Image 1 (tube, rainbow, N blue to C red):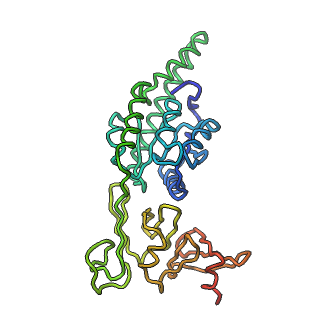
Image 2 (cartoon, one colour):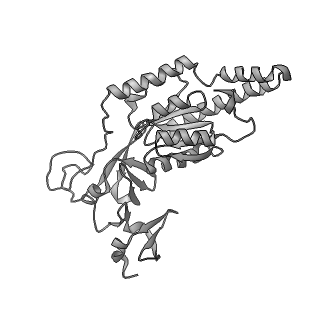
Image 3 (cartoon, rainbow, N blue to C red):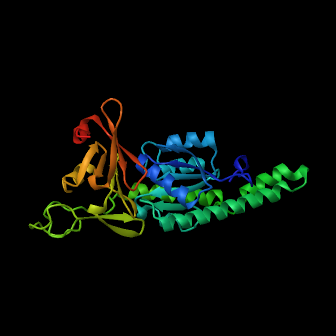
Length: 317
């Protein structure tokens, strides 16, 4: 890591998060706040080009880069940032990452983010930052005449990053794998109404449960089986749907419009084009400006928007 960006030994660690999916960016930022409270997320970026620009402005210690982003992807952005920050790749496609990171100087997370994997990544980043800062402190203690040159050399020899040639080799390996491998979808299956198995995605169609009973969601290396009746709300963006239930959160690729065809309309209501809420989880609803409203939940602090198109559901209030 070059000497123009050496971490201050007493400063809080800093990070930049880059992902083209807002739900995933927000999910990672929340997970980082839990796993590493002292980490300061200085900014977020929507694509690789914006990540490079924001890095130049903010100079964070760590950059979390989604592998797949429009325009300049995460791997190409990493090539521009290499040796100036600690890079963590974030991907929904673990097969792209494993071999490229065997050397251990770069790290990766599989989304949706798994808490155990994130904890391991945080531990490694803490260690690398501590080692780097120790090197910088030792270099700063050298006699003034040798200080500048020695500090620069020590920073470049910091144990937290690969040598330039090896780092470039890892990045090139990732780029090659991305070009050669088809972008397979993660396995998240849901059932149509009347499926023979009440667990999403199983069996041929017979007259069994009228509505979806369970949702299977991959969370890191685990497979979560989420009871639909326990879901508090669903929230989507262009590619993912966030499933929130009392035990946690998970991201799936099934769009809200497909889920709405499979869940009980007596229990769930769509209140916004991107939000579906469990009616049993609502505490109260307050009116807002311009024929909108806000849904307040019994067990969560989030406030969900009700758009004008769905305000009729609460006309009786």
